[in-house]
Amino acid sequence: MQLETIFTMDAASIKFGPGSTREVGEDMANFGCKRVMVCTDPIVAKLEPVQITMDALKKAGVEAVLYDQSRTEPTDISIKHAIAFAKDGNFDGYVAVGGGSSIDTCKMANLYATYPSDDLLEYVNAPVGKATPIPGALKPLVAIPTTAGTGSETTGVAVFDLTELHVKTAVSQKKLRPHLGIIDSDNTRTLPPMVAAGSALDVICHAVESLTNIRYNSRPAAESSASRPSYQGSNPVSDVWAKRAVELVGQNIVRAMEDSSDDEAREAMMLASTFAGIGFGNAGVQLPHAMSYPVSGMVREYIPEGYPKDHAIIPHGMAVIINAPAAFRFGAPANPKLHLEMAELMGADITGASDEDAGDLLAGATIDLMKKVGVPNGLAAIGFTEDDLDDLVKGAAAQHRITKLAPRKFDENDLRDMFKDAMRYW
Image (tube, rainbow, N blue to C red; front, side, top):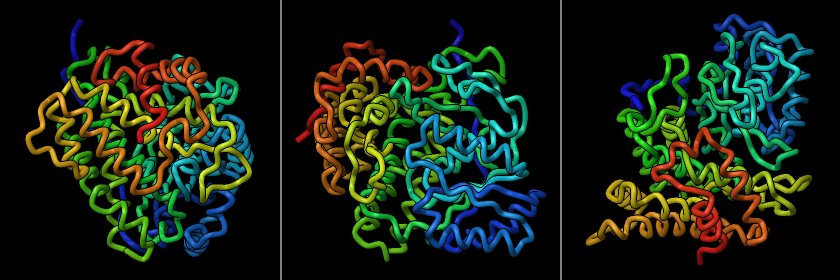
């Protein structure tokens, strides 16, 4: 088997700084857009970032049509609704305002309105979907995040729940990446604490997973440039972005949660999210994310504080971080020194630590962070029991695009052990 010798580095254009949302009208006009769909959710639609966006577009002479039905943790049903709106609207551009859910919904609306298909799984990753390559360029899309977490403004990935299978799946192709991400820390001032925590912990996982997954030159070579995956494995450039993201979160997450007026901490968290997005958008993520998808998809009654009460939800960042300590313990033997470095960046004392301590130290640093920000104590605290293990394992095993980046080879028994470990931590 010939191994890969090449990696690529792609990222969305980024505009960063307080107040930068006010320039979105000029940005869309510069893209040549005349009529755009503004995609958000019912809660964010009532907040200042959306009003600023609509005013800026109007001022620039761009017709803006508001779509405010994006679902927190989108499903195939909610995605189809947004696609229908986009098709009917005959838009030449798109603006997403909100968390990763709104941004991913907007990406999918742009994709399927531009290159329609009767099958929602047309461009979805195999083995769940057909993985058909996106045939050409998409309409201009500007993403304006209102959370510091998903990094979706920098990536070519859109994730949603496939309701029939009770599992998340995704489209992951470079052409899906937004044309511009506007990173405005003013937009995170009103985040409820648990929303801020969930999104921030997603940043940690993005960064640590992309750093500790297999190296880009350890996987099979791509058959062609076009077939090289977006998630390529850890590499020297992604490493730089991801390490800095871990540092920034460790230094600022508690400050940003405890005091929404701490502009410096909130700005640092937005920067960390963007850095991690650039890192994992090219290197990929692995086991914690793969394990999170069935967790989110199998939610029954759990609703965290600060989220809409109209449907049960396990937010993406929470689902990922709850599985992370178990996955980090499993992966550490593949590269103990790197896992020790991650633990130290997250605040652990690694003085005198041996390679055998790496997994426990990184898991412990992650658990300490979970305690500080009030994340539930494992899967049992959000409604799961060991009776769910078979379905959890099945759902995680299906996430081939990311499980193949895991630092160690594993089988379904290993996944079962990791889910059992994640049931309760303290």
